[in-house]
Image (cartoon, rainbow, N blue to C red; front, side, top):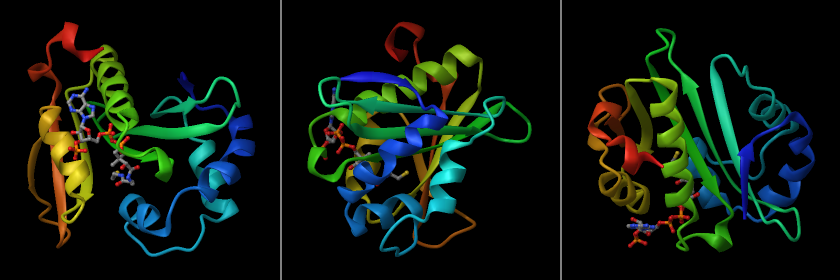
Length: 163
Ligand SMILES: CC(C)(COP(=O)(O)OP(=O)(O)OC[C@H]1O[C@@H](n2cnc3c(N)ncnc32)[C@H](O)[C@@H]1OP(=O)(O)O)[C@@H](O)C(=O)NCCC(=O)NCCS
């Protein structure tokens, strides 16, 4: 498996990737029922501003297929950032999400950010358990019912454990 920053030309990998992401996983990621991700949405996901955001994709080296993606968008203040993650559905539960989260956390720490946070649907127990194991604190999102806000103060992450 190869892990590298997402490039605009990776737009070509998205249709094959999303074909193997279930409607339920899309809902857990985007918080809305959707049968497919529109071209406009893919365009927005691909063309992020590298000054304020970063996305990494996991690729199967042999086939060149996209296996997962994790992204991090800075807040306006530039000290905190919000993540989102999606793994090819048939690969769930094999450790890829964990690896991508560790990579994203290491990147955020290296960048000098203070906090990484994410919104997770309350029923998304896999993600909430994984976040707890990664050191995130979890609380109800005051802005949205049924949503948890997971927060990781990066000063609580030892530098050697971040990678
Ligand atoms: C949530 C998601 C990203 C998790 O990715 P994944 O590859 O399935 O997760 P992993 O296999 O790495 O981890 C899952 C399990 O292994 C554990 N785990 C994996 N690697 C581990 C490690 N090295 N050490 C300790 N625990 C580990 C996790 O805590 C979790 O435990 P469980 O299976 O007992 O519940 C994935 O399921 C997904 O894409 N879901 C749909 C989208 C979504 O929910 N996104 C999150 C909201 S932004």
